[in-house]
Image 1 (tube, helix red, strand yellow):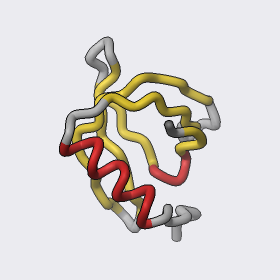
Image 2 (cartoon, helix red, strand yellow; image 1 turned 135 degrees about the horizontal axis):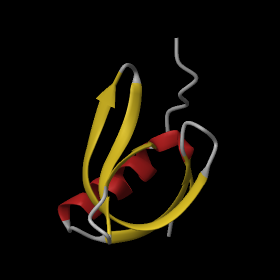
Image 3 (spheres, helix red, strand yellow; image 1 turned 180 degrees about the vertical axis):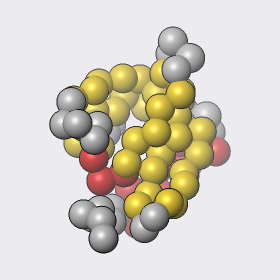
Image 4 (cartoon, one colour; image 1 turned 120 degrees about the vertical axis):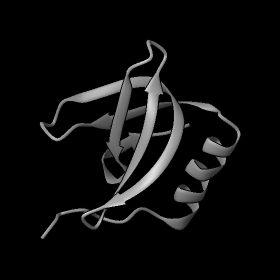
Length: 76
């Protein structure tokens, strides 16, 4: 069982549009250890795994990140 809380369809659609347009977004999120991150990310894809939804993205430094959608705390 997971503690994942689904995000709104409108927010999910916003991520889809950013992926289609290769738009960089400034996101703040908490990782699985509770550490807060603030990065400008170029969104690549969305995935569902084990009943949870994730955003796949790259930082400006080229690092690949995988962010659980319900852990994003701030978006534009």
